[in-house]
Image (cartoon, rainbow, N blue to C red; front, side, top):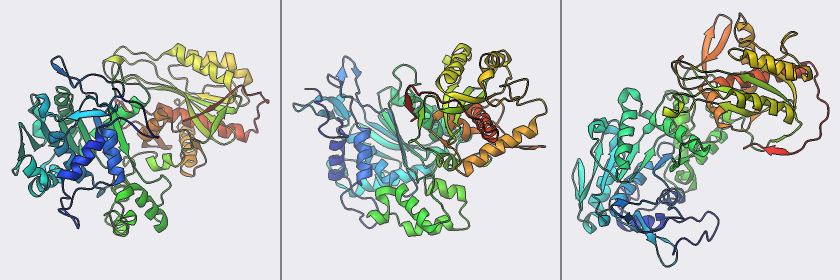
Length: 558
C-alpha cells in the first residue's frame, strides 16, 4: 500500500524515524560530559535526518528492479550549514555508521502505507562509506567520533566491526577517510560520502575536482552525500558556494530535466544582528546555534562564544562566518551579505499602476567567454522597494554554448512594465542596445516625467567620460542599502549580482566590477538596480508624479 498522505502538518514519508531509533540504540555520545551515554539528537538534528531520508511518496515497487537499484529517496546530495561547535561532526559520524549498517534504502511500503527500508548489504551492495576532506586534519573532525562510537558503543559488538586507525571493517564493506588523493579513485563505488568543511574546498587545493569525483562515484550506485560547511565566502568559488548556487537554481526551476534532489539546510543569525551590542549579539548567537546553545539546554557556551567573538585577534569577518554562520563577503566586496539581507522585506506588495522607475543594463553575445547578463530592475517611487522585472543569463554548461540574449523577450518585458505600472523615469545604458533604447524612447519617452537628458529620455551612458556621474550614482545606491533606505524582495539574480560586485578604485572615485573580466559571476543586475535607484532620486527631486490609475491586480513578491 503506497503512502496515504500526511497525518499532520509537515508530515512526510521518511526512513528517518527508523534511522533515529537505530542511532539511539547502537551509538553513543563520543565525548564530553555525556560521553558513553546513548546517542541522543536535538530536535533540530532529528528534523534534518527526517528530511534527509524522505522518500518519494509516488514511488512503487521494490528497491531492486531488474538488475538496477531503484533508490526512491528524494535527496541525492544535502548541505547542512551550521556554526562551529553546533554538533555537525558527531551527527555526521552517526550517519556514516547508519548508512553502512541500518535500513536506509527504500524497499516499498508496509500495510500501513509507511516506507520500508533495507540495509545496503541485504541488496547485494558492498556498503562503502567515505569521510572526505581536503586534508587529514579535516577528516579527523568526523573520523575520531566514528572510531569512538565503534570501539565503545554497542554497534561494534552487534555488527562485529573492526575499528582500525585508518578504516573500519564492516560486514562486506568498510568506512574510511580520504583526502584529495581520492581524485584518482574513479573506480570506487561508495554508497555514502560525508564531505566536511566544503567552504574551504577550492580550486587551489583540488577541492572542486575532489567533489566532482566523489559525486560521479556515488552516482554509480545511487548513493548520497552530505556537506557540512560553515558559511562560505561569496566569490571564493568553493564547493559550498557551488552547492548553494545549484540549490538556488533548483529552487528557481532552472536545473535541466528532472535534475534536483538537493536538500539545503542553512541557519544563520538575523541580518540585523549588531555584533557591538551584547544583547543583539547574544540573541543572534542563540538563533544561529539553535538547540545546541547552552541557553536552550545544549552544549555550546554562548557567553564564552561572545568573549571569543570580541577577542581583538578574531577578525570580524571570520567571527560572522564561524559563530553567526552568516554568509558575508569577499574582502573587496561592494556590499556585504548581511547588509543586503537587512533590506529584505517580503511583506511589500507591488500593485499594478504603482509609480515606479526602471533601470536597465544589457549585453548581447560574446564570441569568446561568458556573455554578461541583461537586467531590468524596478523601484517603487513611494518607498524605494526594488524587484526584478527580468534578468536574462547565459545557462551553464553545453546549454549555453550557442546562447544569445532573447532580445524579443527583453523588449516585451520593457513594454509590459510600461503597461503594468506608471513609469516615471527609465535609465538604460545603451551600450550594445542602441537601437532598442532608441525604440523605447520613441515608444515611451513622451510619458516619462523625468528624462535621462534633453535629447535622450532613456539613454544613460555608462561610458564616454561620465565616470564622476557613475561614481556618484553608485555612492547613492550604496548609501541607500547601508542606511536601509531601500527594500527588496530577495530576488535571487539581483541578490547574487549585488554580492558579486567588487569595489574598484578609479580617478573619480569608487566604481564596481566583476572580480576579473572573464568571471562568470555577473553584476549587471546590480548596475541596473543602481540606475533604477538614480532614476527614483531624480524623480523625487523633480517632484514628479503620475496620474492616478486604477490597479487591475496585485502581485506579492516573494
